Length: 358
Image (cartoon, rainbow, N blue to C red; front, top):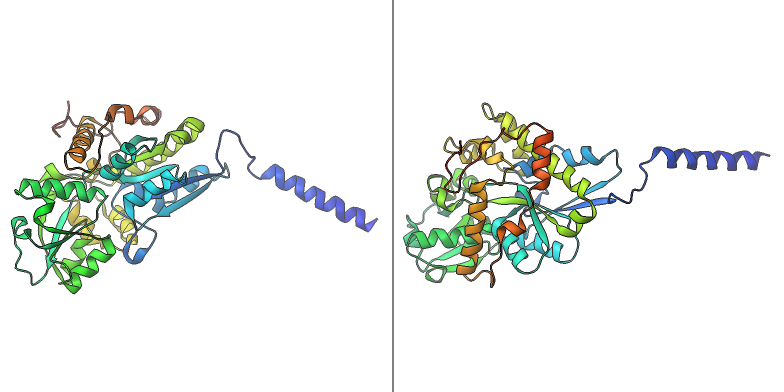
């Protein structure tokens, strides 16, 4: 009799567990796999500086899909954009969060069946750093020098245009392919003469080991852009889930934008990546508002930037064949989310020349 009671207790526990746990659904995945092109200081799995970073740092996707029992798997990749493309190529990523313009273009041109869904880190700046005691003062002084460039990332395309703007090409410098962490170490040890990179180079300046001799804050022609991309197979199989992912990105963008008058909470959150508060504050200067840079919109400006990037990538020999940006773009989910959240007119739209519309 006691054995029967024990068996009944076990059966009852199994039944209760099955009823209270999230049921398996045919229209939902068990896990959403996300590739992020970058890591924080010390290889920590955290980034800052964008709406994509806020989605991760505030656990917004985990909260959105908690009741569904859907796991969120983040992959922060030191190999940046090229490494995200490898995940997509091997069927190991459903979304690329904040994937830069050049790597996403290279991936799509190479046959990766992806779609751009929303902006995820636009109007990013590029900085040029040299050792603190270097005699290099201008971009023209880079001729014949050892210059670190993280190839395959959106830095590479920006650098190609920056050099061209000063009458140089990559052939005029001794370009060395280095990831972000290696680049910073090489500047400190003076194994390179200069390095192009992002906001994290400001920390070297503050430590007294480098000087910043150029940045794009006063030169918007060469800004870098990133987007949220997704596998077309995932979109087709799970359209409702895809829409919810876009919704979460929009919510992160709204939270950042709401802090525009006093963005301290945003910068403080991003410091978890290892980049100091003061560097984010400097990078997000008065020239471009934090709300503008947090916008998820693929407006005429962003579209024009990507179309130009596709053309430039082919012109610089970074891709063999160009393709239609409009065919690559899918803003249907974004439009639905903006309408449902009453945010259709919340962010300023810009025309192809970067001028405010309306």
